[in-house]
Length: 125
Image 1 (cartoon, rainbow, N blue to C red):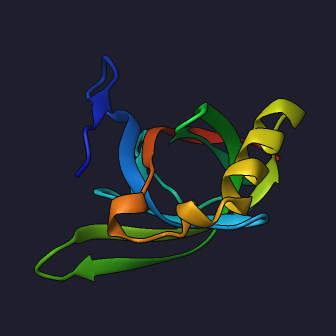
Image 2: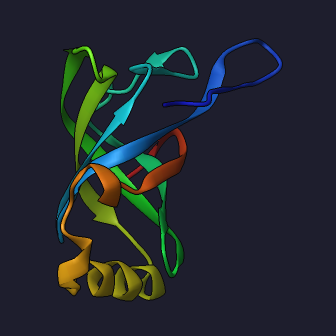
């Protein structure tokens, strides 16, 4: 499910996962760890995560604030379900992201999940 990358100190500097739900204002995704760069993803409410989502038209980069998380203990999935509010996205990525959301064939389901290829540490909102 997830492929984690470590920096020189052995801390997780980025993580991969997949989306569960996408909307105009937010997204949910699953990752294997709630910690990134030795910090809890939900510890600083004044920061946002940098997220790259792989869409059929190419990757889009999103800055999003974590609003909730739940630990998953299921047979099919484990890790953490993260809910986030989109706080920033460049206009080109926003146009492609909204175009993706408008297409009926992109209704979220297990086979429609999009890979989160890059989840990196907090940035200022």
